[in-house]
Length: 296
Image 1: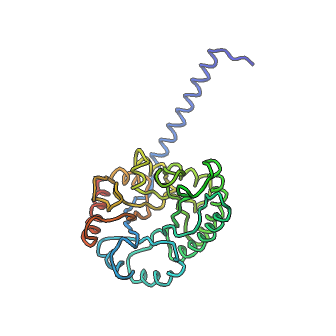
Image 2: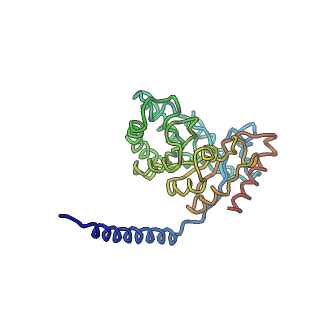
Image 3: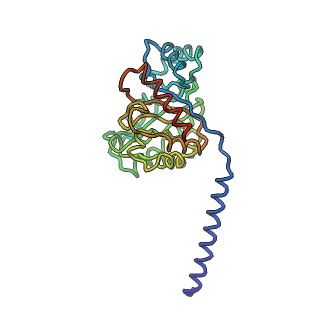
């Protein structure tokens, strides 16, 4: 069947009109969709907070207006009773578990991948017992694999469903973290991480964002969080030079606007160094972040 140029133009006009109508509908639906009111729950990695033991650290965190604490995954299974006892007497909740596993999910060596999966399962079990948001993981750091992007993505997606199912049964999640180009060659933006979670097609396949890496890789903090949308369940806080928020010119209002737009409900956690006296600078940073959230 032959189609004249005029008919092609006519069909194109109809197609454009249909597409425009579809976009308008999507925009209208997005505008009418009411997300839950976002909350700023500030957490910190355990090692950043001064104190001789966990109860002392938690007491300071309560005093300084924290909401959560993030702990490392290495040896976590042996710390469950200790952490449960400390949290029982505190208003502070456990946020995420930071790595601590062996091997790499995207290693070109099957033995390293198996080691990674098995050690992750041990941490996920403990994470579930502690009511954690999820286990933070990076598929591979620079130098950990010889796989290219296509091979690596396939290997990752082959393993994620099993791990996500295990995580969900344990009562927690897998939190895929994008890093900057100096640390990993793969998954550097939140949109990329969200696409992987979409393809994994499991409710426990989730994303976390880090303001430090985002400053290097993302053109917009707000856009990055919106692109991650429903998949994002943890955030790391740090300045441009990986110090406490407020210790350089890094601004968080753009990112906080994005978190508010998606109705973010989980923790934002310090993963950073500190310039000066931690007893003074940490509570000052918490206050700074509360002010940034109000401005957003």
